[in-house]
Amino acid sequence: MPALLIRHARILTLRGEAGARRGAALRELGIIPHGEVLVADGKIAAVGEKIEAPADAEVIDAAGRVLMPGFVDCHTHACWAGDRLDEWEKKLNGVPYLDILKAGGGIHSTVRAVREATQKQLAASLRERLGQMLRGGTTTVEVKSGYGLNTESELKMLRAIRRAASDWPGTVIPTALLGHAVEGDPEEYSRMVTKEMLVEVSREFPDVAVDAFCEKEAWSVEACVRLFEKARKHHPLRVHADQFNSLGMIPEAIRLHARSVDHLEATTKADMLALAESATFGVILPCTGFHTDQRFAKAGFFADKGGALALATNCNPGSSPTHSMPFAIALAVRFCGLLPAEAIVAATVNPAALLGFTDRGTIEPGKRADLVLLHHKDERQLAYELGGNPVDLVLCAGQRVTS
Ligand code: NIG
Image (tube, rainbow, N blue to C red; front, side):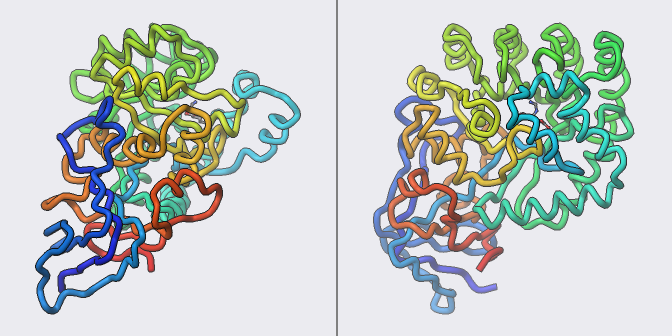
């Protein structure tokens, strides 16, 4: 396949040290105002103001538009069945999210629909959502299980995620969300998950991260710690914490070297500071506050204190019905205290580091050519515009996947 030369682009290289960008580095986009990128064999071959390209290279004229790394959406529940429209109407009438969950709805109603669906049906609906994500510039996405709540259905979800991933041009990272909700007696349920479900999931999916939802009406700190103490021997850990209530999970997550703590809407200042000073990422999900109750994580404070910050859609049928990273960026700058540049770093190179990737999230020679050409000539417009699709072209491993 001939090489591809993208010319006349405003390039956000995001070049810099490997790993999480913190502090001042969280604002550095490494911009080449008028440059060129050469793509060959699925990778970035060269980047600069003027580069040598093979005579037969296909040329794309960016005409001054912004070229940036593909978005990395590091927190989604994009594999589900059914819908939650009736519950949403209840919510519009003032019923809070946790009350719906307590009454057997919310996550539980999606669990019922997932149990009824076949693996094939789950994979097909996920595939459709992945297609929408790609059109919005997402080239790497994490997808959690968590709507099974028994071993058979959790494995069905993880298999469906793997199946949908196999024919998507981007990259899907599955996560085993083993502690999403509770069925029956909480103590007995969490012991079953830790003793039985974890063992089965580890056997078939040895490398996936293990996640839990630490919240009232879901998993207690003690139950999460018990699951994580066992899971950490083989799996990276992630945890949903402080979405509605600060229960004290953050110090435990730091102690257990969790990869990330996600949500943070109700986090205390002291815990936010401790998290910022740790190796654990903080993941903010502003589409959730926008859809549920207008509470948002104080990400500006976290960033100022040097935290490893990532931003994600939290795409799911209950608290965040969106797959759009540009929309998440637009909300993060309006409600979480981020600058556009910080939101861009938190949507690309930082979540790539969180998911363990060193081959993406920046535009540098040798990196995977997951690229997005925006419609805009100024990257701030990505955060400024609301509700449109700012993406003109997406490349995954050097292949055009949108036109
Ligand atoms: O991160 N809060 C827990 N899990 C999801 C919501 C899942 C659902 O409501 O279906 C979240 O917001």
